Image (cartoon, rainbow, N blue to C red; front, side):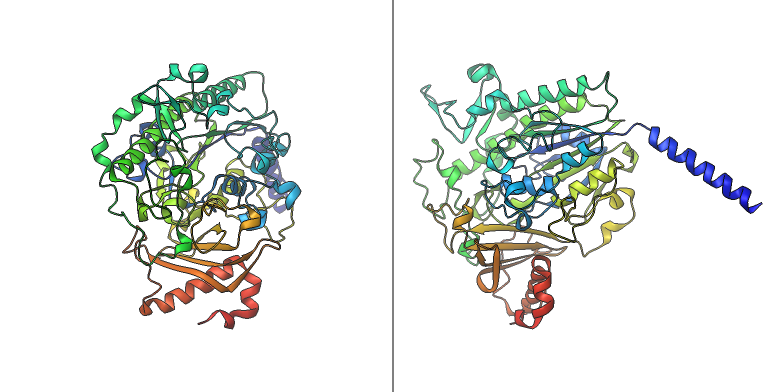
Length: 527
């Protein structure tokens, strides 16, 4: 009797395996928005006009505390797409390609390609240029050459007409499409190509596809069809934040002087004091208005993309590569370790977990988690965790699949996000540019740990020649309690009653960055 049951069990298992093997695999679409902080209705922003992203979120899983590993495009994207931290890739600027500089690491699209997916890139997915080998990492990551919109070449050209009709390189640039090169804009082209690709895969194709679509907006300049500006009355943006000056206890090394904003034609003659400003209230409101209008523009395009997808057969993941300051701490742009520069939207919708199971997840997550999560959602062999930094195929993040399954992991308080930002010196500078220092100029690295309750940031000596750091050579230290100070306005480091918390978080940060160092020398990191 026992042997009969054994044979029956083996037969059922075999039939189950056959069924799993013959079941069609889900397509996967990953959408990346450039410089998008969570200014979405789905994240509770009352000023947002994002009906398509909000509707998508209502049927998906919204991760409310997701963080980028560095608030700069190329390092953030290479970290996301390789599943490894900037320190592992040794990329903090735009000027090195990980495969030749550090190791031939497998990317997220490459992993899907190796497992039978047709992979395709539209728009800005990898950062263009040296950091992706001037090829968007084709042919290793993609089954066909990446699509780059032809109007992309005009992104930093004088195409913004002023009141006299002179074309300028403006920061704020609402336009009529008829006046623009080829009468269109890059993101419009990218969505059209993505929809063409999706349609082409509906017939005569046995393999599933992995499509990555990268929107350029709301990255500056804020160039968008003029009608989106009408949704946002300017008066709503004057009291967005009360910050007009740098907080007194913010270390100078933490400040980013928003050099790219200052360089635009509509701002460079405004006599904005360097490095701390401030920008006038009028200009501040106009920047915020234009940022929100840019988000509304790409939300509208996202709606067009979504209408062309079969959501019953497609996993869709939406994220921002990092945030963008809108006057908090009197700062603008990215280039920092603050919450507003690092926190991003992260939304997942999958046929495996129906709309009825949609929910918000409050546990701390990182963009590093995207690679292993999509692998699990596609039913591919799990991505190994990196135990050897030289391993070709592994990841440094965690899969969010257990949270999507509803295993109660949202309540685990030990998840943290680790981010970092480099500086060429203690003070903000134009030359070298302290917002975007090249590797050879980096002298300081700021490491930031986001826990359930706190953000702790430590700025230490960094040696660019061998990528080492000196934890004893400190240039700045910050501690913010998010229970009382979500805006990170009050640095608690000078207050003696927070010494125990500060030292505990310092040890935890060093453990996260240099685990072997702290295990051997823990006594040296006490004060």
